[in-house]
Length: 605
Ligand code: GLY
Image (cartoon, rainbow, N blue to C red; front, side):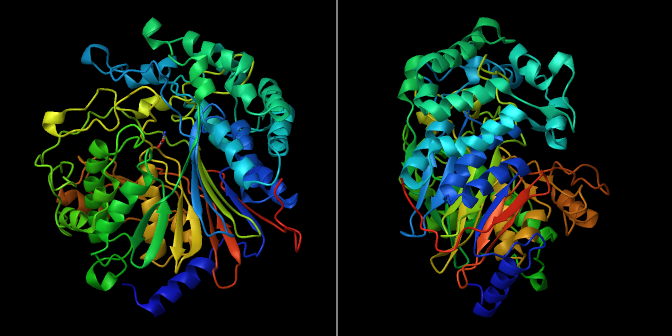
């Protein structure tokens, strides 16, 4: 346990010393794009709550960061409600169509090339974002959908300035804005890629959003727009030829439903965390890593630990490798195939896993563990990984004046999703189905349940991890990140920075991150930008190399050049109710504080 005095010091630092500090009893939004942050702030200023603001941010992101998220995708919205103390999750994850099959990405046993599969209609899951946002608004919001859509409509109609990040994503699109003519027409008008400073208006998208404002989400899930979505994924150009045709039907769209879930709860050094349950691995894998690390004094330089020390980084890497070995075998859509969630978080099980970690050495490639003692199989083969990590997806966090919190990660999967824009409607479709195992892994004899194999109606495993951190039962921060499976490690790094290293919220976000997403253990680490402090020194990297860690390049070089995630967070001081936001300089992270009218009642429709 962390001593009380030390905890108080941490809490004080964490709540009060952020350089981007906006201490306030009012509403705060922290978003990866200023125009989308402004959309959320506008809802708060109009008397809306955090859920209303989240809806407006999400729709605005569809316009200004369309490469990351939108109504053609899905996500996980975590909501913490002040009045009841309840935390709920709106799971709007995309689902496989009814005609999906376990071998659809590996006809005749050979996995399709990721690039070809992920730019085809076959990769498109039934989108959930619009249903998810509408459901959240109806249940916990106070403003109508039409009002939440208004800022996005204006941005799409009048245009906005293309920022550096979008320009870079177009320039380095891996062909994704070029294969489909409708996508190229928006982002490469006349064949010329948009560059920073250009103005982008999206009249088709503006019309779509106006239609949704007038008619609601059924206009998306049924009727002419649904027909256009189905045709787009069936007829899109594909390097796979006819094998790349999407399998989604009108019935799949009409039947799409969100799930309202309870969060998974984890504990770390006296703090409590609430995070994502399956179909995301975000909560389970993060909490497993934390539990395995708890026996190491990560915050204590006197014992050779402390931020960025070789010992600290080594045990982090080893815990990540063990947890990702479990993730590969055990975690998928629990509604389709039960995930042994309780067993995976069992303290005795995690103690045996943690015992494999040695502070000064590197283990061989670990197998997934055996969290169910009744099982006798121990060496479980890992599914073949075909996933590529995209830095995209998006995360934002909001608190309103009543203290309601939203932490929302939303995605169309890879940067630019499938690259397929629905003709006439102006939005991109996801390629989320590539989050499934390409080659079916289910093998009873080998003890592999095939947790993340494709099946009709199933949700692909996610890594999205919107998280709320509690102290003494009170929420003190919400945060999350984009970045494919590195999301888990970004959330982990920030948690350790807050709890073990006593950083402020902004320092915890700025600090360089370290990530491993597979048991084999290729290390990615940051250090290339001046704000990423304190650096992982070359001497430290050399120590890790000498232990046998891979991914860091040559001895004596600075191998920490990755960019990992983009964390947006808000914190609340449980004693005073003051709150502040912190945003990530890895993108155009923006914090806006909003003075909400005194004594404003939180009115529901
Ligand atoms: N597609 C990213 C994730 O779901 O984690």
